Length: 187
Image 1 (cartoon, rainbow, N blue to C red):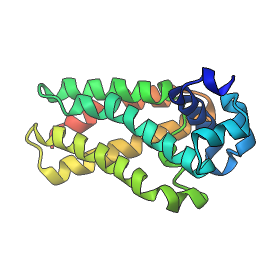
Image 2 (image 1 turned 90 degrees about the vertical axis):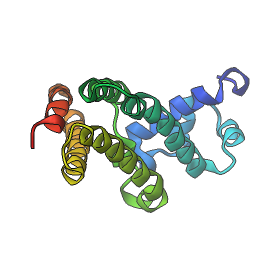
Image 3 (image 1 turned 135 degrees about the vertical axis):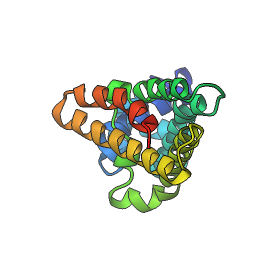
């Protein structure tokens, strides 16, 4: 694809997929070029800072999607159960029904771990804060709501790992369906 025919958003979508498949360390410039259909020079035209800038842009791009799909439903008003169910639908879409790897996982290891710790920790905090806030609205103590939100994040991540490792998304689907009930169960 010539550089003029592909938007920055499309480039980011292709880069996201490449980083989700290969991780930060495994996503060479050659692989990123192949994934986008752009030559190396064209990639550097979009991202002067090279692979690190591409990865930062992917993290920001995914952050926008995460805000829209996962966090926005939690920040609305209304019934907590309905908001949590809407969040679960967003999580399912964000992770492509359990097929897409999590950048928090992939960018949290190796040399990328230090480079991306702040934005990744921010994403985890944003999720747990938003979920804990909704759960606390039901009358559960704030510390219990936070623990449940953290447990929900851990369950999601574990289910993603199992789905990727086995090629079977059943655990991911089951985990998603059970999270609202776990979050809202009586203390």
